[in-house]
Image 1 (spheres, rainbow, N blue to C red):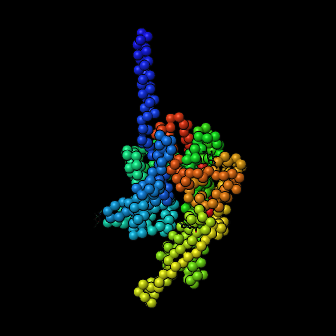
Image 2: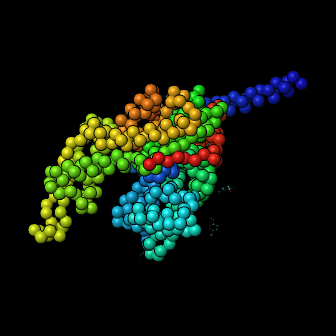
Image 3: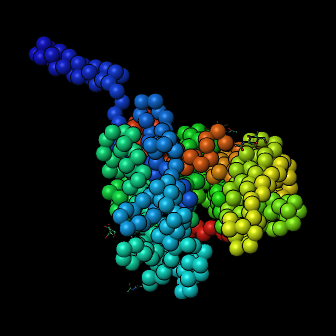
Length: 440
Ligand SMILES: *[C@@H]1O[C@H](CO)[C@@H](O)[C@H](O)[C@H]1NC(C)=O
Ligand SMILES: *[C@@H]1O[C@H](CO)[C@@H](O)[C@H](O)[C@H]1NC(C)=O
Ligand SMILES: *[C@@H]1O[C@H](CO)[C@@H](O)[C@H](O)[C@H]1NC(C)=O
Ligand SMILES: *[C@@H]1O[C@H](CO)[C@@H](O)[C@H](O)[C@H]1NC(C)=O
Ligand SMILES: *[C@@H]1O[C@H](CO)[C@@H](O)[C@H](O)[C@H]1NC(C)=O
């Protein structure tokens, strides 16, 4: 009797040991659930690596960790990401971007016609929903979720190539302000790409998770997301292991392109002073904008940067020579100080929604435990300074602000995939009745 028990006992022990040793010495399982950030201008995919406990943001064949959110239709192919951008200049009316601004939304009559005027592609109103008209061999329409699906398919393939396993499951992030219908259509985009969505999480929650704030003892987290064209501020409240969005506010007409525009206007005036002509040629404006954009990025790292461009300044129908007048070389040095002066009033506007969410949440600024910065424009030193001065503490900035959301979504994907048996997961309480207030 006791012999039998000891045999069974040692079998169990052996099994237990095998399992234990297996866990120690076998390579960790490949992640099967990916985290997706389908952004307005860029999108990315990440996975949680059970072995190291780190997130890998997956790069494309060229090593780029995010791809432009653009899809281009040609007579022979549907291209997504950088491939779409490569043909965008020669195929502008069939290259759709910004589709996230339309997904799952019902528009008032007339509004979509107005929107269409802002884009080189055609947007039409199909019973309140947006559709894009494509003119290749034949004319057809596609939905915003179809555009989303082509981007997600590209991300899925990047992940499969990197991991070497087929991927069928994902977690995806959406803006906190997305209503149920917008969330549903985002999920539909993923389904069209052959992905089952295990959870939809809010972008600010994902950003907070990227900093591990679901694991530490914090209560109030403020997330400031400043991208190319919009500012979103969210106040999160952690209760138990869950994040609750307490308040949202923003400005959908404030972002990096406005700061570039101020520097462009200044530069254009410098050209006029130097050559007596304001640049109006399309190519000149394009080259000057590119140079201004490069200088803006450079000024986040260096105290000064140069703006250099070859400009024609005259139309080619000039009579002197068939090529028109020769190009002139424009060059100017700009300092960070000048860039800050040109934009100070815009930078100050960032604090408006910050104050609003605090008032909405009945909090004093001292009550905010952590501040998380997301979006490329939060790299601008003056913006970081304004926020840290206002709160009297440093914001969390160690994660690349362009990859904070995908990093957090990948952590959530790791939790859903069971890679985190010992960690408490932070799920969020959906907040149906919250509305985002806009200041612009
Ligand atoms: C469109 O036309 C091109 C050239 O005429 C042809 O090669 C291509 O297969 C056509 N594509 C479709 C989708 O019909
Ligand atoms: C148009 O939309 C309304 C509500 O959004 C819906 O009730 C109606 O069935 C739709 N009509 C068509 C033709 O899809
Ligand atoms: C969203 O999807 C869920 C589940 O499929 C469904 O029950 C709900 O009615 C949908 N809501 C909207 C607004 O489309
Ligand atoms: C940035 O500006 C610095 C200082 O003007 C210059 O040395 C550097 O080459 C610039 N880098 C780029 C990428 O423009
Ligand atoms: C950022 O977040 C971490 C939590 O992971 C925290 O420990 C740290 O103090 C925070 N603040 C700064 C300024 O890094």
